[in-house]
Image 1 (cartoon, helix red, strand yellow):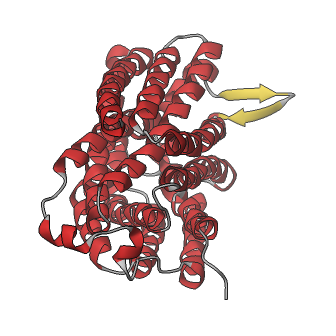
Image 2: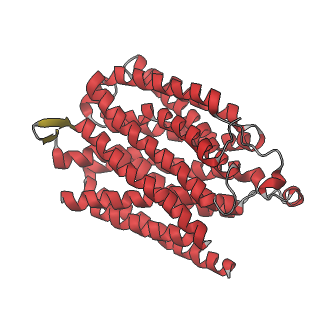
Image 3: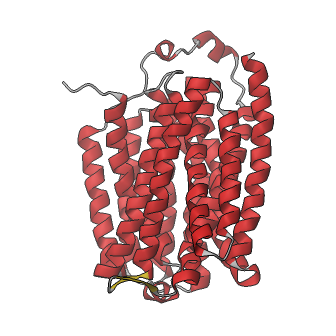
Length: 407
């Protein structure tokens, strides 16, 4: 009998996450290109709506998903959600045009609500107060690995097989992930909450929803998702295009813009894979989450400002610095929730926090694609830097309160 250690559970979840993201990240990587948008049968103006629709769906479904995970076993919900994700990717490829495409984006929103809230819930299931930052950081590492590999694969699949066939391949690989979870994903819901440090009497006496903690965790999540999952993800191909136009040539070998974009996203995301567990481990050791949050927020502010400089070396360095921030924030938010919210309400709080985050990521793509022609992509990134600065100041305020509690 194989022991379900945190590393093994996270590996099984992580492989499924990587495979689940193939279809979604293909769209973010290639659809902002007008030629590929035309091949998909949609206008460039509609791309922003399509890229944001799944997130609007999650705004409605994150709450119910959190409610289900608080009351039902994790495993069947996770497998069902990944199955819906495979179906959504298939629908993108079935026929050009917005009809089934819109339905597929709604299905993906429902799928990711189940996959991501479930993954974070399982991470809190298998962690304790001394390892919570490390475990949630490791989960984010798998998530960022999925973003990176899926973006790279999406660009390569599109360049090698074409838009439609590339998505068929992505749907097949996601189905492999469903099979993997059927055979290897364990059930982690605690049978005895006392083993998780839960005081049953306190839970029964205090049924009020922890809105204050929810708001505190939601603010950095909203800013992060608006800027990274919204603005940056939907404009990376345009941002690189101002430096490289149709692509680059290395030693006589031409790298098309779609593949270059996917490769750059993959490199950028690899940086986040390092920062997510690092921020979690540091916060575990010092016993304070918010001061680490403030530091990574200000690092993100500097990186975003540098991305808005029309000098390739400065802009690329800024992108990598900003990505360090993104990983740290995502790793710290679930740990903050786990520290302050009891077992019976963690999934609902996670659902509420990610609902606010998804609102930001839904607003981001149409807002970005609307503003780029008006103010330029560089000015847009510098506005994002100002938002990160404001969130960093909020982090400092929370850090001072956290320090007072520790003392």
